[in-house]
Image 1 (spheres, one colour):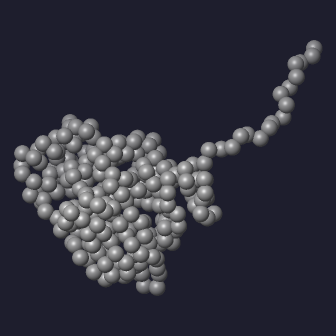
Image 2: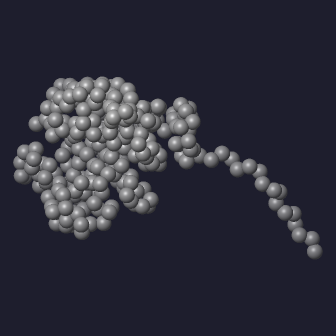
Image 3: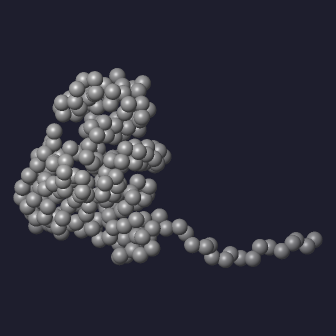
Amino acid sequence: MTGIPSAAAAAAPALALDAVALRYGPRDVLAGLTLSVGAGEVLALLGPSGSGKSTVVRLVLGLAAPDAGEVRVGGALVSSAGRVVVPPEERGLGVVFQDLALWPHLTVRGNLAFGLSARGVPRHDRHRRIDAMLARVGLSDRAACRPGELSGGERQRVAIARALVLEPRAVLLDEPLSSLDVLLRRELVIVFRALLHERGIPALYVTHEPREAAALGDRIAVLEAGRVVQEGTLDALRARPASPFVEQLLADLTPPGPAPPGPAPPGPAHG
């Protein structure tokens, strides 16, 4: 049982940050940041290293409290200025960290079972949910393996499966594909998007890669120096970028214009 009232969750964004600020020493890490993730929506939070993306994840999870502003999950206040109101374990959230944080001594099945056991899910229900999730991510035959025996792509699938098997209110994904090669990233982006949308689970997907944001996000929020400088659909952002920074960030996603005219083709050869 989580500390989030179900009545509040029904009519509110799945996740919301309102005018959130956080300082580390003299530096503003987040400065009046406001964003929300709607029911069943995947919001891609896109920004360069140091822009505050992972700090947003920490605040939503309850691993830190903001200096100002509010954090809400399903409409319920979970953090406010200087205060964690609802502890992390009672927020009902799933998470996939950049380093995956799989338990190395547990099998694949054990990694998925750990959170379910901690939440008091009955044994028969645990087995049913784990079996279904492993089949969905194509890992039924790897259930008895430990993380060190898996490939990088398989470990990523375990991490997303572990987050989703909990049937969370929302899931946070903090640069989960950053250590993989380009081809494997493309493959797993398709897997992640399918899993999130077929279950209707709201998600905040954090990345510095515009192509990942474009492929996964129903909307994209662009983060620069701790502020959301623009948010909207990919088409809206490309059509009217709010600043040169946004335009440059999305430049690789803009279809190229017509090629300039080249030299006239050579005429027929004359002997």
